[in-house]
Image (cartoon, rainbow over all chains, first blue to last red; front, side, top):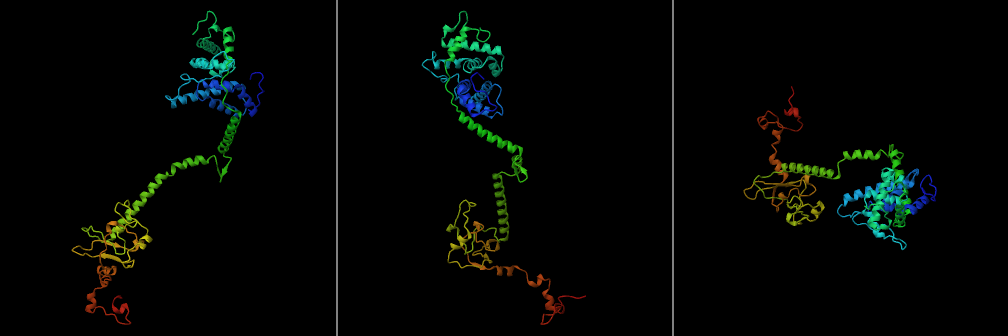
Amino acid sequence: MTPGEPPAPRRASPEYLAALIARHGSALELFARQFTTSPEDCVQEAFIELALQPQLPSNVLAWLYRVVRNRALNMARSQRRRRKREIATVQDDPDVWFRQEPSSELDAEQLSEALAELDEELREVVVARIWGGLSFEEIADIVETSISSAHRRFHSGLDGLRERLGLSWLVRKGSTPR
Amino acid sequence: MAGPEGFDPSLIEAEALLKKMKPRPANISAARIVYEAGRAVGKEEMQSQWGMGSVSNGGMSAGAAPLLASKWKGWILPAWAGGATALCILLAFQVTSRKSTNDDFVTHPTSHSPHVAPNYPQPSQGLGASPGYGNQGLVAAPPDRLVEQQPPVAPQEPQDRVVISQPNSKKNPSSVTASDSRNRSGSVRDGRELEPSKPREKTIAEYLREQLPPLESRRNIDPLEIRDGVLQPPQAGMTLTTMGMIKTP
């Protein structure tokens, strides 16, 4: 748990669930949205499963991301099987994943498209790191890879985003854009 | 390529810039999750109770009931099979009874003209006639309806009388439609037996009288013995022994 959050009770109380949703719900949905077209269902089922746990896991946030990822991948597989030709994949027709605010320096739609174009293994690390706030250790545990691989994926994904978003001023000298 | 976390300053800048973008708000509510979790908890508790068999039903644990039911499912015929079996049994019974009834009738092999008793309605009257009933235009109406719609011209005959139609021409008694004890309901058994009524010329008593052998021969008494005086003609006060019908050693 990040500092500032209420201490985790033994079981998930409604107040604790509400605090978790308010703080991490949107990021969890974004994390699920990269896999499936029904991210709300995945996140809701993950929270329900958390509420049913007799004892809260030691790392609630990492646990939630892992459950959401598994459910989203399963759902994406079944969706592809059922309506292979009807449903456009996230990569083919991404909707806007972010809120467009006046103070934003980036275009929400452009960022959504750039993120959707990334490889899945890079994208999930970037999303979990930037918007999920997870550490590389937690990400490595969730995506079942090593910490160094998580690092490499994050940096590669970030480079790809910079290139796609035209953030040339962020490309450091000497680095080769992908 | 940056090594450890936060080593590359440009990556930190890019990360900070991207972090400013907020994902779309989540479309989930804590109340909904608590409600769904409560439902799931209730279902799980019920399932655990059933699995543990804590709910007893007449000495049999409720947990074992579904298993038992699934076993019985294989034993019991499905509904359509039961219906088909019942239909087959009914048809077989009908065919058997019709065959035995037809065996009782006196039919002429060359006669195809149906006959009917005058107190029965004709097929043309259409009393509940159903073309689907054996595709023979049979009259399938309840007995009371038949009684109600009988033609008033025909007198009611005793129900135990067998009507034997006699040939009007060169034909012999071709077919008999009986209203005997097997057909007391008044329903018509076979439409092929129906025809506009023919005059009755013999009753069952007359028919039996003709068909049955003489009474004496059935008792193994030779009428010639009586005629020859071997047996005493019966007189008042005589017993069977004195008449010679019972021989004593």
